[in-house]
Length: 79
Image (tube, rainbow, N blue to C red):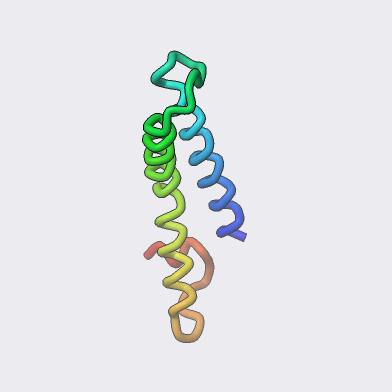
């Protein structure tokens, strides 16, 4: 449910950021396969994707580690 939804959102943010960042140095066109450009684009993409993935993982791990059923739903894991 929530994990599938947020994974899709996180991946979308990741790939969108990667595509935008790899085109920035050349003004909108990837003109060379410079590894530094792709490294920095991947770094930025991972940082922005992590803004979605990290809270989702924390909620998921809290719910998996809980004894019994202290959580009523995914949003209850944020508390």
